[in-house]
Image (cartoon, rainbow, N blue to C red; front, side, top):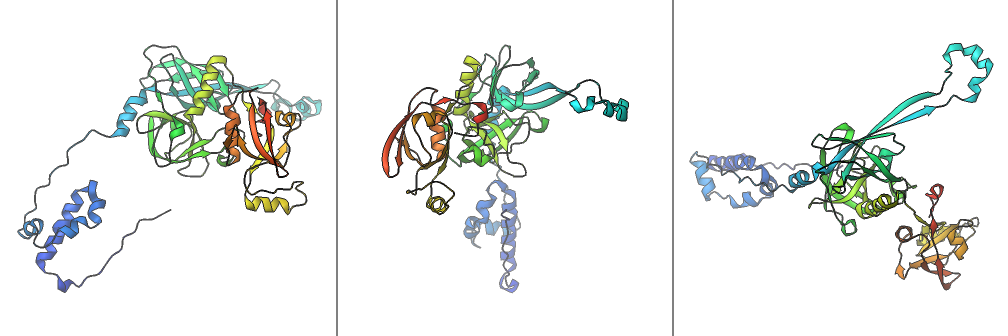
Length: 416
């Protein structure tokens, strides 16, 4: 944390005249009244211009304060405009599901029954779990994008618009691998958002989040794009296949599924994750990824993710040294960069294509890859059954290997 501090200087009061003291007092009063430019004043621009012979000084000596000129009121707050335009299309999603807790078989033992008597339940117990999240309207047809974990397993889904209208929602489909879901409602005059392009994002751009954190509807927070391309493992959700957008716009429980917007009011991401105990660390699914998944859910109700069946790591000189110095590693690495295949899953598409542990990948479909995330993205962007061309080195020999990705089993989500 950086603390602002002020540096004080001492002056010989005898060296200043009453006239000059009054001049400085005038400057202090003027500076306090111009709060919008206070930093600029403190930088010395005004002080350096306010000499004893200046008009400001002479008026101060005369005991009069020049009338302040009010700043013109400008209705150019782009955040306000974004919220006014997009806010009506952001919804609150309340979901509930009934969970049945079965009685462990051991409790049916007569000894337990005799000892505990009526304290033991005789019937399966039911409880209702409730949750609240956010979402945003993709189109006037009532299709809403949200997080899969907001509606996962829900028996009932209720959607509330900013204008107070409430609808029963139907879950069109969910994808736990990317945490994207689509919910549909039936209604008229439904507002919709405009989608942007998350591939063009750069750190430092404005970020605006709208959602329902902690049940506080239509809450707006702002910040910047802190980083792009944060891998699932970096964020702490290795079972997902997303390169997240990082933002310091405040995101809290209940923001899940809400939009992350740019300064033009376009949706650039879907807010989805926070790191517990951290401040200024929120994560959103890039809208290009979420849009691709949502289109498949709307069309078929499910998503197929391409799968290779390899475990890999990005090579560095330090990693190469560690591997080569470890006799238990079972590998010998002769390169300082590239993506090392550490393990190939049995009977996987990679194994069937002939990829081996120890292979070092440099290109996929003729495109250089710098890290493991690049390969994961290339695989995720491919189609099941299509061809991926890998250019790699095996024992200092250049090779080309074609792999046909298969469909990702859910239990394999933590692997590539």
